[in-house]
Image (tube, rainbow, N blue to C red; front, side, top):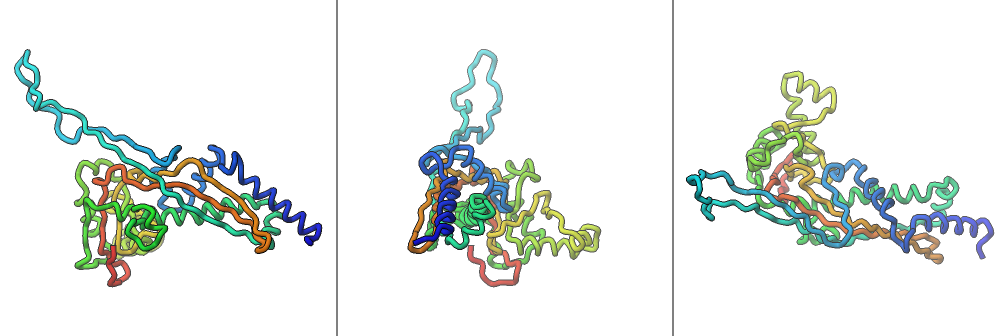
Length: 315
């Protein structure tokens, strides 16, 4: 039989973990929003993309605009404009359909004891889950591919798989990272999307960002000296170059961050259980999510890069 001390610890653990659960196993709306912000606050690509809380498994975001010229020469006074010359807005929609992901966390009794004594069990669990989940979500946002042999990555197409309209392929030459790479990306972007370069981003791997900074450091100028002495943000033709931790070395994405829509269904379920034979408490988190571009035509994918003198150019 459990001694009084151990029984007290277990009762305190049950109480602490049960405080994570409310409303029949769902976090209430305010808690759910807080948890989403905790993940976004981590230093990942999630800081910059457009996060859309979803109240249902599916959601449609409508778009409207004029894709072609609407002005034309006016007819004579008293004559109506011919039907063929009239304009109508073009409408489209972005359809989001969430997929479910799950995390199961096992907390051994002996690990819980210290956390219970410090009274930070709930904060510890939520913080650690948020930190790890943010990295896992970035992996899906970047590398998701429904054709992947990895069941998790096959849940949804990420930004690399969805980018098909404008592809700059350096596979034949596998260049190192210099301004020429980014120049090609800028020229591949349709002109209508280039009105605000400072709001756009080149998303590259950390190694690619470092190699680009090194190419700037080779210049015998104040800029070159500054790149060696201090780490400052990198720019290419007016566009910030941002490192995304899980971006492959051989690939890059050029778009504006808010063009990437990350839908998260609002209700985040947390359930708990206890395995008395294994002496662990179990916390299970599930959420539903989807990834889409608002406008795929405003994305340039660069492939075939080789910042580390590698030979693989897999997309």
